[in-house]
Length: 203
Image 1 (cartoon, helix red, strand yellow):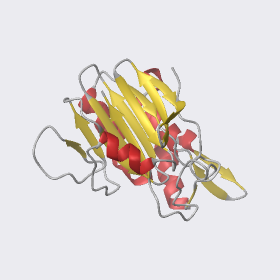
Image 2 (cartoon, one colour):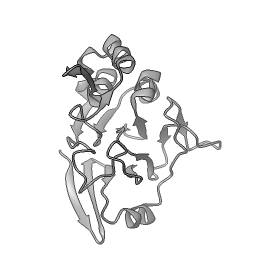
Image 3 (cartoon, one colour):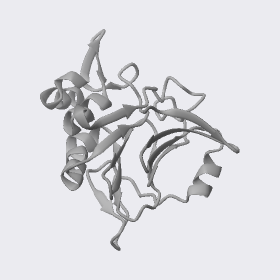
Image 4 (cartoon, helix red, strand yellow):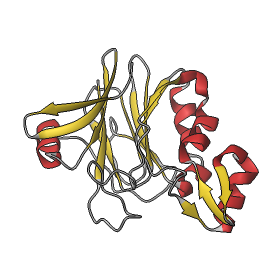
């Protein structure tokens, strides 16, 4: 199993299939058509650790969605890391920036799903994700492998931190592309783009 680049009609996207579960990561090409076709449930995102159960009525403000109804759910991504989690009956997707990770969003998803497998989408990589010293210090205290120093500058590896929280044993695959390094595919806030990528999961 691995991520594959799929062209379908006007849309081009990355897809990872595991049994009945499909993780999708949009590209710039045909993004609007993809969203119109799949009609995902989305959130008002706040860089938090809040995961919303969309099978229950209520406000949809947070940084994660969980469902047992098999509908398409998703998050918008600029450079942060989307994480797709699933069990036999449940799907979940979370938006992991440094604030959400340190607030415990991945650990929250782990507690909600318990026995799960997961896939990592594309994000800004440690090649490009420079952070301030205070942010680096917070990660170094809990995720020492997630911080590197080059020429007295601090760089963060979001995937390393999330994998530490969720466990490498349950990880099925990762889309190893940096959003900032690949302008042909992705929007990147750090590159100055206004657009957003979509991370979606269906069952």
